[in-house]
Image 1 (cartoon, rainbow, N blue to C red):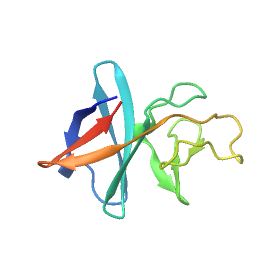
Image 2 (cartoon, rainbow, N blue to C red):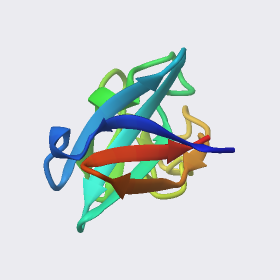
Image 3 (cartoon, rainbow, N blue to C red):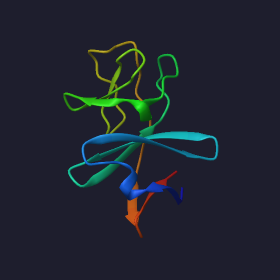
Length: 102
């Protein structure tokens, strides 16, 4: 794996969700408590865009059918059993940009 430039750091406000695409790979990013977290950008239920989701009670919520994912680990919320876990990725910020390790 190698870190690849994804988005400008300023493109996601604190406490919000954003999206990035590197090649054909979609990612969902969360900026929380001054850190960036990254998981796969496609919901395991019906392919919803997780990068267009919102934070609800500490979970990243898919905008299509409200499946919940832990934005730090990618683990699915057992209460929303119609989704399965997704992969998480390390991030770093350098020179005003967020990089994703994949």
